[in-house]
Amino acid sequence: MFKRQTFPCLILLLLAVLLVQPPVFAETSSPTANPGDTAWMLISSALVMLMLPGLALFYGGMVRRKNVLSSMMHSFVALGVMTIQWIFIGYSIAFGDSIGGFMGNPLDKFLLRGITPETLTGTIPEYVFIMFQGMFAAITPALISGALAERIRFRTYVTFILLWGTLVYAPLAHWVWGGGWLSQGHLLNGLGALDFAGGTVVHLSSGISALVAVILLGKRRGYPSGDMLPHNLTFTLLGAGLLWFGWFGFNAGSAVAANAQAGLAFVVTHIAAASGAIGWLIAERIHQGRPSALGAASGIVAGLVGITPAAGFVAPWAAIIIGFGAGVICYWGVLAKGRFGYDDSLDAFGVHGVGGTWGAIATGIFATIGATGLVLGNFQQLVNQIIGVVAAGLYAAAVTFILVKVLDATMGFRVDDEQEQMGLDQVEHGEVGYNF
Amino acid sequence: MKKIECIIRPFKLEDVKEALSEIGIRGMTVSEIRGFGRQKGHTELYRGSEYTIEFVPKLKVEIVVPEDRVDEVVNTVVQAASTGKIGDGKIFVIPVDETIRIRTGERGPAAI
Ligand SMILES: Nc1ncnc2c1ncn2[C@@H]1O[C@H](COP(=O)(O)OP(=O)(O)OP(=O)(O)O)[C@@H](O)[C@H]1O
Ligand SMILES: [Mg+2]
Image 1 (spheres, rainbow over the protein chains, first blue to last red):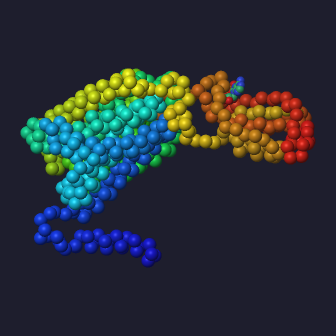
Image 2: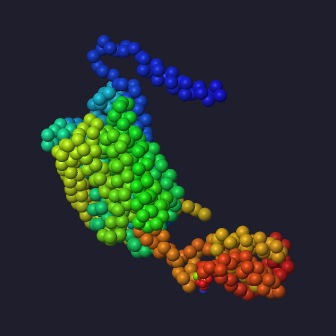
Image 3: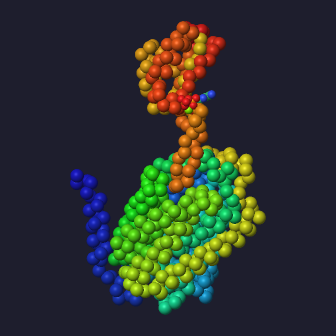
């Protein structure tokens, strides 16, 4: 009994020491990092990192068994290459000195130049901020892989995410969070376009890009026939659970402090995930007769996507509407692919594109905390949100269009028919997920 | 000797095995298979999209017996595996040339 409580006691003691620590360096002028904020942001960064294995499981369960490793690798390799890209130029493009509000100077913080352990961003070490933001830069291109799964070449995918992360993600992050033209203080009345944790920068941008890419690259062989079933939905549920957990870091960490706004973001994130699951299940029950496990997993992610831009600005009651709405709207969103005939394998557009758009607009409607939305009579904020969505969507779509065309012409984006039939695990990686 | 190859519903395996043990059958082979009969498959919904599942999961139970036990075994399986609904399965009876017990080298019905 005693032993079990020793560890928590030590942590409490440690926290107490940190909190009551006298301001030893008060007389020196250089500010030091806030311990509480720093601790929370270290944890948040690790939480967001866990979303990549979560995404790997979420997507990996939905593909056929012959593509399970390929699909999971799309998330894991993103964590590898996007981390290195982020250190070299990604962070500098997103958060370096602004060039006309469009992007940061890639040389300003090239290879994290000029940053020391003592350098601060706000109240936390800049290194911690770089890691937190770097996890976002890794997961965003990986989201696109859900649309392209089961048909693309590995080396072209790696090249694509490196270029996409550099030309699309990093500039968009600059626009909204790096002091660019969509940031608060800019755009119509200085209100900016609100995007607390990446509804537009992460979800809308990846979702729209996913749609453009699948339209250009075409359907999987034989789609939509009977053999395209998810091979292991237990993975998918577990993945959704890990994403839910990691999303607390994604959203509540976006306060970049251990403060009241982080607490608000945490509670509305949890509410929206729950509401999203319920919304999707009800829609499914009404439309097709049965609430499914895949529906629950999808609804959780839809609710989380929906609340992402709103998390620091809305009250709990609004989170119920945003989450539930995301569940229902994204259910409708994934049905669209059947109607329009594109093959978004794992519904990257249906969930992230549609849910991201709903979230951005809902933020302009329901913002009541630290910002004013339509419910408080501020029509301008809704207009700004729509400008943000259209601008980010058009920009991401245009650059993705060019990237896919160029890569397809030079490297070849898809594997050939025979390889697609054999499965990407064997063809691209020389191994299989299950040896019995 | 004959091989009795029974395609049955997976959930009927326990019943079939019990019934065969009761009549003194001491060996069998079971495998997971998929197939379809006259009705073809069924449909499943994933995220609202309908997929036709042409091959339905079934189990294949193989039992090799001396000629004089064929009817008894077939009747036992029919009784144990039946639900009376479509898709209950099939039984194929196939001639077997030889049986050899690897450990001892015994041949013929004695090796079964
Ligand atoms: N002609 C056949 N050859 C090989 N396997 C068969 C054949 N017919 C049926 N099977 C196997 O038996 C399984 C069950 O078949 P099923 O019981 O549906 O047959 P059926 O002729 O359609 O009878 P029912 O009208 O009772 O459904 C199939 O899934 C398949 O594995
Ligand atoms: Mg039949």
